[in-house]
Amino acid sequence: TTTTTTTTTTTTTTTTTTTTTTTTTTATTTTATTATSVQPWELIAGSCKVDAAGCISSPNYDPFLGSLYPDHSACSFNVKEKVAMEVEDFNVEAGYDFVIVNGVQFSSSSTPHGKVPEPNSIIEWTADYSVTMTGFKICHRPLGPCD
Image: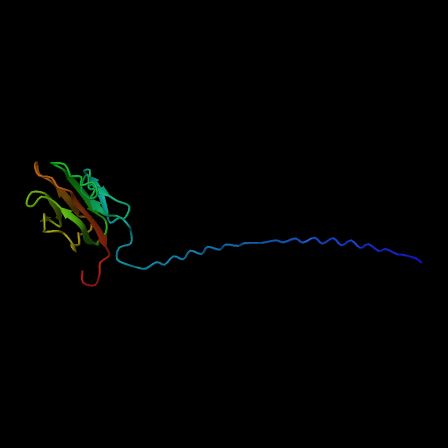
């Protein structure tokens, strides 16, 4: 009697490669409007502000803190582009503190909302010596067919 033993050894190597590809696509759409820049108004005097969106505000304006503009404050903004005014907040002393646009004084409930300052003109802010309030914030919008 003969006995034969056979041993078979099998080695299997498995390699797995995972590749992840992330593609980000950014699309930019440009729409032609009358206003082409973000900042149609430029502060030329005083302690008012022009924010990153091009909105103008009185000195110390902060609706969350309730800060007040100072007595005798005054500011001037040069109008660089013809855009309409969008009043976001307007809390100034009636008859004594004014935003002046195209030579017209605006105070209290009389606001410059929708007014269109002439290019190369000056928007002015002036406050008297006594009562102070939270002030104003005025943004802009492109001119529409009704402007």
